[in-house]
Length: 168
Image 1: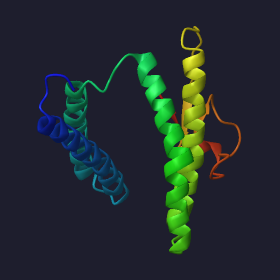
Image 2: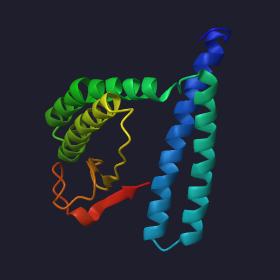
Image 3: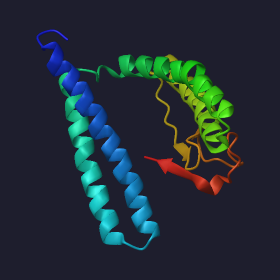
């Protein structure tokens, strides 16, 4: 990065990963607190999660990782393809070798969902200037993304359509 010292750039990347990880972990904590009947604790976890997300996005902006929408789509497509074709297959092999069935299923479902994400990005790149709007629904179990309201079970993990979340 032009004009930025190497150590500062590394620190911004480390801080981004830490903040983004904290934001997601706290969202998980909030879900658990809600399920256990602690709505105030859930609100606290969600509030701090939102703050951590603000920190993470600020670090991304300083790093100039967020670019034009077209560049962001291309980067996202490449990332999803690398993950689904390269990283997850290796993770699955290790989980199988170590006999960790839950991890194997989680990695396999994520790989399959990531493959679909890549296709959605590719389609968006090809049709970026079209004036069409779509609703996206995300499977709350495996992360599969469906264009339009799903009418059938998730093709990745087989949960019913009522387990999909509308993303606005």
